[in-house]
Length: 440
Ligand SMILES: NC(=O)C1=CN([C@@H]2O[C@H](COP(=O)(O)OP(=O)(O)OC[C@H]3O[C@@H](n4cnc5c(N)ncnc54)[C@H](OP(=O)(O)O)[C@@H]3O)[C@@H](O)[C@H]2O)C=CC1
Ligand SMILES: O=C(O)CCC(=O)C(=O)O
Image (cartoon, rainbow, N blue to C red; front, side):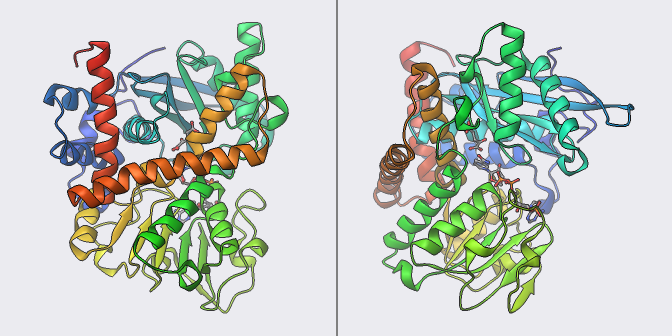
């Protein structure tokens, strides 16, 4: 079933277009509204055909599917799944699959727009996609997670594929989810096709280093930002919201590199030690969900308090829309590095910019995930495995190149880091559209 989402979308009751105008209450500014407003603002800094900008406010398509699940007790529940495909002028759609109760057509559309820019900033030959199922993954047994994923893969079969659209993990999904997805798709196609998804376990064509990659790039971005502002990482304090794939890997690397990580949180709150936490001893979401508070520490904080801690670097690495107009004035960090996708609303971004807080945007900071996904895709096509050392070296190189491209715009054109990243991305996308003769 291929549809434009309708008001049947139980998760939000809004279409992608309605989502833009529905966001009247600042704190509830939707992902899609933020993504569109960011695009409009950034477009004023680039010489790009307004028709292209108008086109880029909309996805190519959003696939909406019903995903029936037979529960372990024999009853059946039907969930709604989505795959938003935003733009593919530079290559196949690329982006994660999220299992979360708030997944909706509008959210996937906004997230797929950010994937288009992210792939362009990193100069990867991909466009932007994002999808998921509106479900609480913690309510699923492992067998239910597998059955749901296999059925989702069947429903998406016509729109995904190694040269069409290549999903990957996101919140609530992991390497095992990708393995089931790849197996279900391969069985339907009658041959093993590892390149249909990335983020798989290495034993079936996954790349070493993929799981840690978005956290690694977030740490690299934090390190480079600290250096850009003439500070010393050894004297830098860091707070991290979210201790999953992105947050835990970023925190542990920065800890390894000499920074002092004073607070980390999961969904239930944060642990705080002004002298620095031993982040390797704190259980990650993958090791044990909701276990951060079980680690002994001098103090605990709420998730709101962790955002307002007086640290040098704040890394929101959990859910979106956590820095809003309501708390932007209370953010005490000098540098915010966006590990999560869309943690800062449009209005909050403007407040932080006025206050001189540097915000390193998600489309640059957490782009290590999709970059190593690209490496995985190359390995799958070539049937050749790269070592972890090679993956990390090439990631470092690609991140530094993207960092320099964006930094040059910040320095030369006096732009915010987000606007600068958009200038790099939009210029490449517009150039590709021009070269292909696509209008718009
Ligand atoms: N995985 C990837 O490849 C990439 C992910 N991202 C983005 O990074 C963010 C995190 O994703 P990822 O690390 O994969 O997710 P995970 O599911 O691995 O971890 C999420 C973490 O956030 C915590 N969390 C969940 N809800 C909240 C909340 N409301 N407040 C505070 N903490 C919360 C979870 O706690 P608990 O353990 O208690 O559940 C967990 O520690 C998302 O925005 C995602 O889109 C970006 C690039 C790539
Ligand atoms: O690895 C990928 O393809 C995409 C990861 C992702 O969803 C993201 O960067 O937000």
